[in-house]
Length: 367
Ligand SMILES: *Cc1c(COP(=O)(O)O)cnc(C)c1O
Image (cartoon, rainbow, N blue to C red; front, side, top):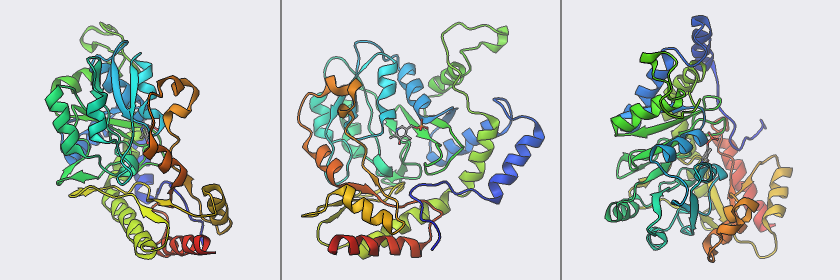
């Protein structure tokens, strides 16, 4: 059987064509037509007025926090289970992350705990649509509005996901996407901020370009960043974007196959969507409760069959820089960390391979 991939990118002729066109144009750096084209198409797809491209998802989150003026003394509410890049930008701007536990079914931040974590210092709520599964945006939006605290969505894993037919990336005052090599689509490395606020978008376009006032030459009235996406990256992004519907369909199909075969198997639970929510299923993921085998053992046995898996993100306060922020018990996060596995979800995999993965899980669990 061909190699089974966890999250490898899917690149082909279309990507080659776009890249060649870009190289032939000589516009490989931060000027060139593919950048505004990618931004415009992205905004249209997600459903916001604007999209501002960046060098990475991490840069996007940093820029969004900076744009809202968040800094020392301010607090930002984040889920305990996420990739470190949701949280490090909070530290970059000098603010304090406040961690909340996750829901054992959706694996996303619990709205009631978000509300309880709000203080006078809270300046943003940063919901992460983990593994592509949208957060309870009805409840989080309601809390945000009632307290007048803006939302910055970490939509880095959820391109194509939606709530009541509305795409993730449209709920916050800003939302951040990633095009890292393993995400739903890749530009090699890159990110995007979506927003309906033209003023914020214009200002962020200015900030990513070293806060350069081009009407005055090399004049910089503010401290900016070099967070620009390149035309080369945008060309790759446009090619990948054309294939997004196909990628999303494949990822959803893998999840369906895993469910068809694993439903009813003792000890298996799935990550669940909220009603009327659609996940991007960036990574199909399950929880395994096994009486004798721990996760490393299960992973080892699957690896021997050629099946790569990955454990759920480590609760952030386990990392030395964040230990001091551990304020309470987070039982659901720790339970998920102990039992959760990401399954092969690369769109390079075939449906037969997904079936093989699911059957192998049954074998390993029931052996
Ligand atoms: C990938 C990711 C990011 C950061 O994106 P990069 O493009 O890798 O910088 C942030 N948050 C989450 C949840 C991610 O998965």
